[in-house]
Image (cartoon, rainbow, N blue to C red):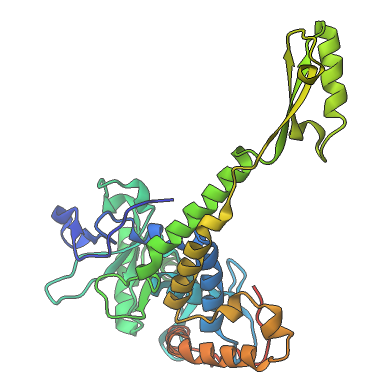
Length: 381
């Protein structure tokens, strides 16, 4: 768990690198990592993110198929990955390569991949106010020592034929590939690093802010409450028994202790502690049992957990609690309309993001996704 974060700001690191300088994602450059750890470390946050993702992704309006032959990724899983990135980070990075169609003299996108937001950084703007590269690396280990020459980077998305040709030529020249032969052209296409499109659900610059930004510390609080409960359960007294017995010889002590451990508890010795005492004439002092009461009390956090849960669910487009924790009263009780109305309500709340995914992926991949909402099936987590 990474503690402490600040929202993305337009601050460049390694400014001397010119256009290879990058914008930090957060003052400490750990904002997307903190966001992920906070949400996934929270029971409510992880469930809310999962449900939010499903509703943003919706249902495919076309037949599912393999969209990336290298990874054998299906179109549906690509949509899910896109929705997950938007739900958690407020935007997504999609990488595409191209194949050339001689009949149309155009390049067609292929092998799309959703990149990890945590590893993506934008380069400095040029004189026209445009960034042109996406650097892809493990920036959590850079600690201010970022060197662009040692990192992978991709061109900014530009589907125009002229831009793709120029980029292919640049990579071919850098790789020493001769473009005067058919073999050279084929090799140049294989060597092309590809383009990355950064789709944002908000106008934040340079990076998006997580939809859960306002409740990230609430997610962390829920995580630590869970850790406290675990620590109390694992390390606190849990109604164990303490026995004081008269001392005997070493062998006698061992035998008595084993016998007593075999009498008690589901896990035998896990529920009893034996302590031998000096000789005494008082029978009450020869065998004495002391009960150690449990020190675990989860009631102290009950109100806090409910408050945190409500705030976290609200951050994910006001996710109805009944869709996350489907109790008997809603799903199997006398008023099933409650559950159906909640689904319709949340479909409407996530419509904008679902349409964003449908519109931008359709445009990038040159297909018509036609994503629809989830209204005709029970969604479980």
